Structures are given as structure tokens and as C-alpha cells.
Amino acid sequence: MAGKKESFRYWLTFDPETGKKPLLYQMVKKFDVEFNVRSASADKDGFVMALEFTGPREKIDDVVKWFGKQGVQVEPVEVGTIEG
Image 1 (cartoon, rainbow, N blue to C red):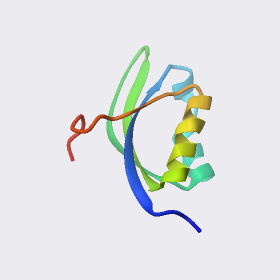
Image 2: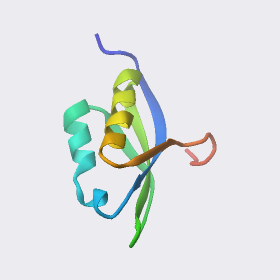
Image 3: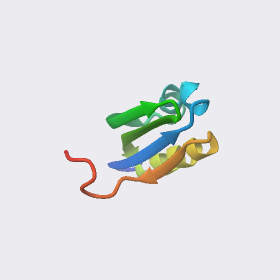
Image 4: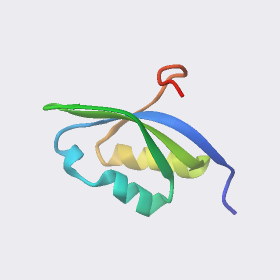
């Protein structure tokens, strides 16, 4: 039985090579977790996205671990960093 849906926000930092991969698409197909882009910025050195994931906590934990294995740096968003 699936757990209760919860929402958690994370900063994801991609280097230029990792950023070329369709990781958000792969994440949705693999884990069936919703996401919302809360903020994003990019430059020649890579890009940073603030994403809000919604789903069972266990799946979101798996998503965070999976992104790390793909070479993406993942850090929780501190409360109050992103409004709304």
C-alpha cells in the first residue's frame, strides 16, 4: 500500500554534462512522483533547480538517492528560501 502523499523541496545542481540527460523524464517514469519547478537558473557551468516533489515519503527518498547516483547534487531547501 502506498504511503501518504507529502511534498518536499530540494535544490538540484547539474553540471553541464549531467544537464544534457533527460533526468526529470526518467525520474517520473521510474518513480511516478510529481514534481513542480519552483526556481531555476543556468549558466555555462551548469544549472540549479529548486524542485518540489510530491508523493509518498519513501518514493521521494528513493528519488533523492537516484539523482545522487546520476551525478546530481541534491540538498533540501531550507524553510523560507522559496516562497509559496
